[in-house]
Length: 552
Ligand code: N01
Image (cartoon, rainbow, N blue to C red; front, side):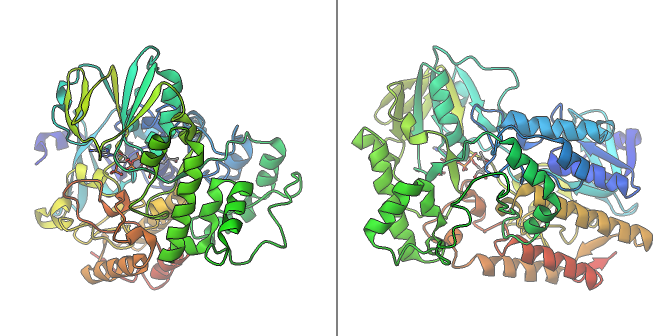
């Protein structure tokens, strides 16, 4: 229970939003525009969410920046320039700061304020939020804009607390620069964060030891600087591009500049309509990859739906990697063997495999050589001791549900979200939960979220929530929540569309399934049916007078 006296010092607004990442910032902008009073609460000392916390060397986005940008303001679209096609974390954080300044958002954001309890006051029909400061907050509506990948996962390794060197997590990287020169650095984890950080840490540190449990499928990222002509063509076509995003499975327009750039390969009339790997001969497959690069393997459509095609692609991938790593034993350890391409979030890299050819980098396979303990000097495996000055955890996040469960949400009749979700997340459209009236989740479990361009997903969700609140206000309706049946039907649908995809293959263990957190229920959490289908469903629900919801 929260401290009841704190309520006496409570600030009351129409809406309380938790989190000042892109979702929380846009919610504040949009709801204010709707005439609502809004208070945003943020644990960090500035805006940016995931881009505020993930400052590790090499951090950058895997969606092109001209697409990973907001479409709600034409002025914003026109005035902002991206320096690279796929931006690095500092540029994305600058964009977040620009938005905060431009739309005067900071005035309604309370920084350095961590929410520790969110409780429904049934008699008053209000949400009461307790924080780690002496202030509490009350709102008729509560919007959780807490992000999908915001609670860092640190595995419970024996002796971890005894390490006397510097301990870092990629998801909680310090703001001040970390001097790694002359340091022996160890890194645990080879997911997206580890793969991005490893080449950069190898350049900064005297020695780098990579502790890998599961090898990764990773392909080279686009590393082009932004050309003015390309940026201009995007700006000239932004309205069309936003429409194209709305119609694309992953919320990405795939718009290609044609006027100012000579790119004959983009609109090749001879390009095969259905790009399949299975019908090609081994030589044809090899040639395609030699000509177009390792990432070409990802372009074959059957790789994601046909297990045989998937295995052909996996073999081809392994053959190419063997040619990239000088030491054959190291190469063999780097090859993913017991799961297929498409099971996990695709990883993109800059010089990942070449990094293992450096003399200051070593690879330890912790499946061959399990970690026994962490001790004051470093890591002890069954094969020996690795002394370290710095230990980096690149061990991911308690994804999608972690941040929602961490803030201790209690709904009607004292029922907690933890109780409701003990067997996995139960929600309708990833927007709301029965028993938690007027509490909304932005990009919650059961919505496309992490399978979509996040900024597109955020805009759609925040717009939907803003319209819903307006509907409640205009019609003097006390509150809204989904019916239990609508939740169950939606979850059944979410599971049904995920079935038969590589995401849910029995060999697949990913954070999408909660498989990275011991004891977490194995459930495929995001909606894989595609963003347009999902968006249309949300629109249809509203057109049918909020079908599946009840007004309370
Ligand atoms: O986390 P992960 P991440 N002992 O969970 C290992 C987004 N993102 O932070 O696979 C040893 O993918 C674990 O091993 P295993 C993106 O959506 C995007 O890298 O569980 N190892 C794995 O290797 C991404 O998917 C960008 O066997 C342990 C690693 O730690 C998501 O964030 C950049 C271990 C965790 O990988 C998460 O990526 C960065 C243990 N006890 C992140 N526990 C871009 O936009 C865990 N591991 C490009």
